[in-house]
Every structure is written in structure tokens, then in C-alpha cells.
Image (cartoon, rainbow, N blue to C red; front, top):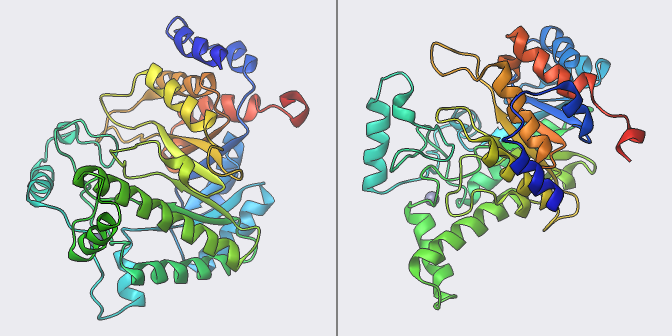
Length: 366
Ligand SMILES: [Zn+2]
């Protein structure tokens, strides 16, 4: 424990990443990429860089079958992801039925308007669902309200279809959270909250709303994870905790999933300090099994190589972020997006160095 803390602190002395430093740690064992594309193109490239899992948002059965088939030849497992922003599939599966949507209050709606109207490059440091920098930030994408039972059955249907694809490794969860990063203020959610609060009259309204919102969010995830395992025992569940839940950003170890990705290094400026990355990794990995034995922590690293829209981290910075995660005791990483790693040769080299060339064998890890 104290060694890890010393490493976090010592990190600031170490400016340049050396291969020797990477080798000295126990090393990474898993690299998962969020993305997609033509299986014949992306899978061999991903394998070459050291990815061993790909998560796609695509639910098309033929596409998934092909991706699983090509993935199998290159040692890459496939997940398909369900997400609370999936209004397109709602309309397809529930034609003519209005989707139950999350709602916000006046201030949050005003923040949404302000963010949407902001056309400057970098959008005044808006964080797109990561920890906010502006006084009030909300997610610009509309989200389903998961307090509605029909949203649960919608997701169960999607999960059933995904797990019907032979040999798919499992399902992933994304966008499981609140649009205002705290709670849902629709009439249904508020009624459920009032009833919940009446049972716990000693809690202040503010504290109760936080606790209700966290508990129901965790239970939604865990119910769907259990559902996936009931459909196909052995199916894996992976997630990324997103958008941020402000009352408790690192709540991921409460989730009964196999691989819980939590943000360790976000995309945008101001880039997170290496100390923060290392400290988050200590929690993500050090407390991964606090609630569930099956859970493995995963650190999410944001990578965009889209200079026309966002600042690019560059290979040196990415190497420092990965090293900070290693220093915090990390052994698994999710990257979003896979395609942004693959499209840039220097970025590929960084990941290859950490995940392919120095991936320790089982014996070395003991
Ligand atoms: Zn609601």
C-alpha cells in the first residue's frame, strides 16, 4: 500500500518514460477498445497493437457474427454495448410509444442551452459527461429514464438478442447515469424518490436524493448484469461508468460486473494531473473487490486524434498517463476510442509498447 503511495508521489520526479520503467512494474494484462469498423480491417490492426477486446455499440446480428469470427482468429473477444441514449432502437422496437425520458430543472435546462449554443472550439472547456469544469454542466445527449420499468425490459430485450450471437464474449453498459450527473427530475422518478424518502425520514432531502439516485442507478446496472448471466451463464459484463455521478464519481466497485471501467484519464483540457490519474487508479484497482468478488477494475483512458475538434494528447503524454495507471497498481485499461488509437502511428506505438511488447507472461506475474 505505502509502496503504491510512494510511487504516486515519486511519479513527479520521473519525467521521461523509459522502457525499463515499464518493465519494472507488474505490467498490464488487458486492453479493451471502444470503437468499431470493418472486422477484416480493424481486428488485425487492433491485435497488432495489443488489444484483446473490442466493444462496439452496433447490435446488428450479422455484423456481430462476423466480428466475433474474425476476432476469434486474432485472440480478440467481442462485446456489444447497450446505452441509455439509444432512442433509435427504442423507436424501432417500440414504434408509436413515447420513450420515458430523463428530465432536468430550470437551471440545468439553461446550462444545456448555453452548452449547445457554444460553437467555439473546445466549447469553453465543456467536458462532455466527464467531471465538469464549468459551474453547471449537463450531458447534451438525451437519455432514457431507467426508473421506468419499460426501460428495463427494453434493455433486457437488447441483451437477449446480443447474447444470441454465438461466442460473443458478453455485453457492455455505457451511458448508465444521469443527464445532470445527479438525479432524474421527471414526475415518475420524483414520486419514487418521495416514497423512498418517507421510509428514511432522518435523512435530509438533499442527502436522500443523492442516496436514492445512487442506489437505483447501481441496482439498474446490477439487475441487468444478473439478467445477462441468467440468459447465458459465463457471459461477461463490462461497463464504463459514464456520465460522471457527482456525489460519488468512483462508485464503480458497487457494480456486480466482471470488468468495471472507471475514468482515470479524461480526454479534454485541462488534462488531469498525473497525480490525480495515479490516485484514481489506486482506488479503481485497490478497491475493486470491496463489494463483489467477481469485479475487476479497469482504467479508462480517453484518446481522440481529432485535432480539428479537440486537443490531441500526443504519444509522450499518453505514455505518462499509462505509466501513472501502472504506478497506481493498474493492470487493465479501456481506451475510447479504439479507432483513434489505430489511425495514428505514434499513438499505436505507445500502446504496443505497454500492451504487446511488455505484457508479462502468467509466470512473470506471480
Ligand atoms: Zn425519470
